[in-house]
Amino acid sequence: MRPLYKRRVDVARYRTMSWWETAVGLGATTFALGVALLVPRLFSDPNGVDPHDFRLAAVTLFVATVVAVRARFVGMRSLTWALCAIAVPFSLWSATPYVLTVYFRSHMNFPTQLCIASAFQLMMTFVFVFVIRLTVPEHHRPHLRLGSSGRSAALVAVAGVVAFVGIALALPAMWLGRVGIAPIAVLRDLPWGGPAWALLAVAQEIQFRGLLLGTCERVMSQRWANVVQALFFGLSHIAVQQEGPIGFFVPLVIALGLLFGWMTQKTQSLWPAIVIHVVADVAVAVAVVPGLYGY
Amino acid sequence: MVTKKFFALLVTCGAVFGTTAVAHAGDSGAWWQPVGFSGHVVSAVHASGKTVSVTVDGEQWVSTDGAVTFVSGGVAPPESMNSHDEIWTIADGRVVHGQTLDPSSPPLGSSAHLIAAPTALPGTVVAVSDDGVVWRRSSDGKWQQSFVLLPQRIGSGPPTITALAAFDQPITGAVYLATDGYSVLETSNGGDDWVRAGPGLPDAVLSLATDSTTHTIYAGTRNGLWVHVVRAIPTPPIYTDNALWWRRGGIAVVVLLAAAMTLGLLSVAIGSSSYQSHERRNDC
Image (tube, rainbow over all chains, first blue to last red; front, side, top):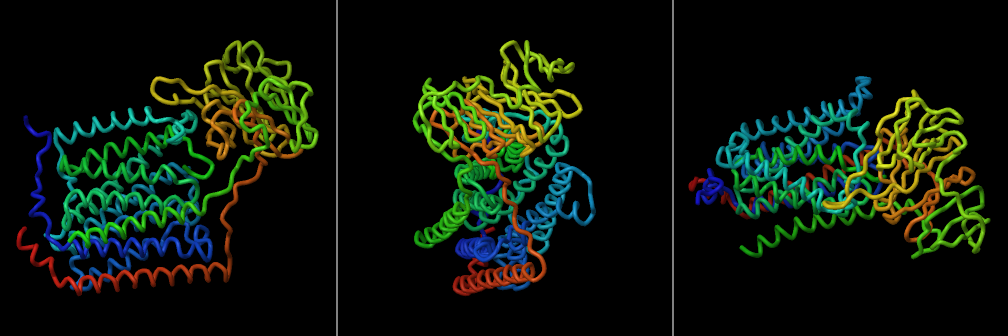
């Protein structure tokens, strides 16, 4: 029986760096990001002072710049730029509607502002992809899998969308907040909001399943690389959820991260994860009713 | 080898659970508070000033001290959950304004009876049709479908909409919608957007009643009577002048310390591993 997928990357020969350095770099940077995010909350209200989490972008940018300048840190460059590619575009995405409203006195509605913000986030992500190409040696660079697709990737994408819809309907509605659809809000927001969420999903897939997963695969087995990027995917959503009951949400995000990473590795293409993520984000925007404190 | 891998995973998991715990520590308190009749079905509730009358397991109870104590007996609460129903009502499946039929009213069905019109938003009306679709009338008189409930799971239908309520004084423009399965939902902008407004409340809510004098809304559920006192969701404080700059300075210090800590750890790690990456590169 022909295999469904064809591995285009020889994984055993793909690992070119010491896993220990990358693991320490990831652990240390994660801890530093946690400190930068949470310590100020003990003494003040950074939601009023730094609502766009610029402090996370500053930590990653500072570390990545020093690592890029010093030759002894060459093994860390790919990882630190990958973490920058997550934090900096997020702050840009978060701040864009505020900047448009306050400094440009824009009268655009929020979905339109969000679409512009998502486009900026995607562009900034590609900036970091370009920076990685410029500063990281070829044998350390992550394999993005953006240029590859095929029949197996398409089949997996379609099957994934069907499975997502089926699972979303099979689970009790209150678990997910999938209680109803507001037609007025959907017709008002979807023309700009749909593309906004789609661009956001594409950026996140490039950041996590492209750059971070690709970097981790250079130093550890595919299984562990997938676990690490999924855990970081979940952690990142904790940073976003400033208030309110998190509960079910973060473990679900970690599970989705594992699934998307596994699909990317098996099909050797980022596109199935992108397609399913886009469908999921738009479906959440349409059919999940937010609670008083967020999700 | 196993020890190093385990250590790396432990650090990552610790960060996950640590930040989760801290984030949970910031959760808000209960929005709905239990009043009484826990474990009993409160199928109807009516409130006016200090007088609250409820139907619990088919029996009537009444309170004259603002739901602090209840005594058995009293008049059954009206079946309709309407607010100021002398203005907007439903007759023969159509919405009536005073004595006049609303010309653009959609057909709601012969047994439709749920309608609410917040005084704070003149002209705005929310009504529920027989088939469970929520309609809203905007201030310009146009009716649109405002909310459609989704099935609870595959093979089952959506829960029943049991009540609608709004305040008959301009306290808030919110309209509350009770369901027997999705708790309470709320719209604050005349039906454009809805949010789930039942934190702390059981999922099965059978009745709602608002009381403008005490700024409260009561919810009768399959597990007792609950109350919410209308209040604004707190907004983050706004800092000005020195307080703002002190806080920004503090954040900057934490950022620099965190970055320095990371670089220190990286230096130690790389110094001790001594260019292992060069060995693996030759295999590529």
